Image (cartoon, rainbow, N blue to C red; front, side, top):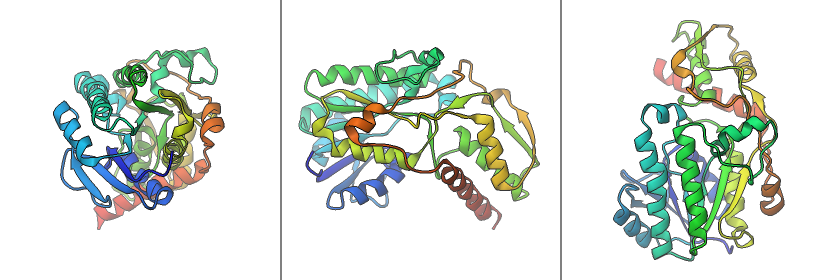
Length: 322
């Protein structure tokens, strides 16, 4: 598409939203960046509009006020563990909120590109086939978060038939500084930083370590969103793209690397609360379509990703101890 002039982003104050703001500034320096928020103003954005995903009227009013030519929908309840404990709010936000926003875009800004942050979790049990999955793999979600994302993904595919200019991106597991410790890499990094700082006994609690995940840096994922916006005119409505490294890593090896970086050797204990009732042993994605159509490939070295996450939590520990 021509360079967007007004970009509306939901979830703007979240982990990915914060990184995406920097990526959008660099890619589209003349664009107005508009944060849709359920709270007050979001620092660093050009404009803020109130948005309640639970209220279709609020969605319509927010989109009408923003007048976007592109919408990036990041807002979601994303922690898989939380989705097991309270599935209903996850469905309400991730499915019904997405549909309310998409219907608002279709009604009030029908020419706008609707970029949806889906998830590789939608493939779920299809990973048991043991091959790198492309976008035509069956959606077989294995947890409530994944199911809500798969339902929204499918619903947006149908809306594309009604004119919604939607692109569905399915990023694999991604991390970086600023992510909460509800996710595996920052959960390890936070504990490692606290142990190294003497703020926690030398015991690090973990979930399942014998799992393989296709990890990405959040900066690479944001680069994928930018690439999709740049190439939107080349994408048919409803197009879906995986964002994946194609290189799965063992979770236990990620932990070992973080402990080496932190310079500690704590006792490792498995904690039942960190285990999923249903889980997939190995995930790996095929991102050939994103490479061919969007020109996207991940470039951030994994060692840099781990070092940046650990440094973030070390800084947090230093602040807490100061």
